[in-house]
Image (cartoon, rainbow, N blue to C red; front, side, top):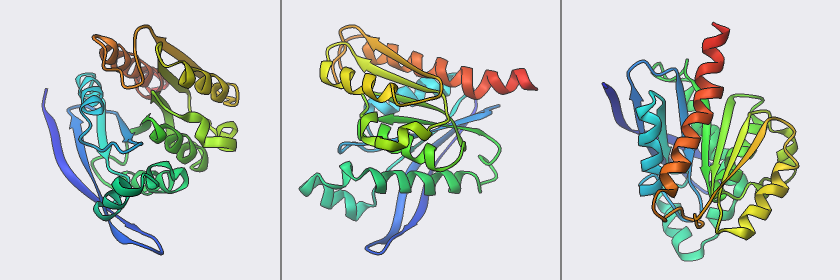
Length: 227
């Protein structure tokens, strides 16, 4: 399978910061869909778990963009304060900036768009999707905190899958409560034996397959059937 892989930089601007955020873009041959990864809780585009999930999506001819939603300077601050990783509004805003960038690039502008969110990144993905009037066509959360999206949950239009570890009871409860506030297609998959980080044997693999199946159904097959 041929695949284009490159490092990208997206400019971001705010009252406090003018800089750029970086990401790893992989586009398999004949891709018709792109999934943007929203990391959270101190993670980055170098997360081995999210890189693994991205590889599973790539094997299904789904393009991926693993992006850091904080600048290098902000990451230094966040490692000291652990504050920015919980700033859902900021993370969602950055994800929206990335989405607009994707839609302006010749290699990605026609690809159907989905979000994959982990931890607080899941809330950022849901908020960004709700604010962008359907630009994101499917969302998957792994071990996420969708509850942190608050009132934006009711405005999510994209079919959403919440994947949670069976050994993560607090997060299971939070995901169930969030799902009850999402008024579009929303599924919950609880993976037996999995903790919050899906480090147990076979659990991350199962989560990755579930994510790929969801994106295949709502980003790939749905449009193929229409065509």
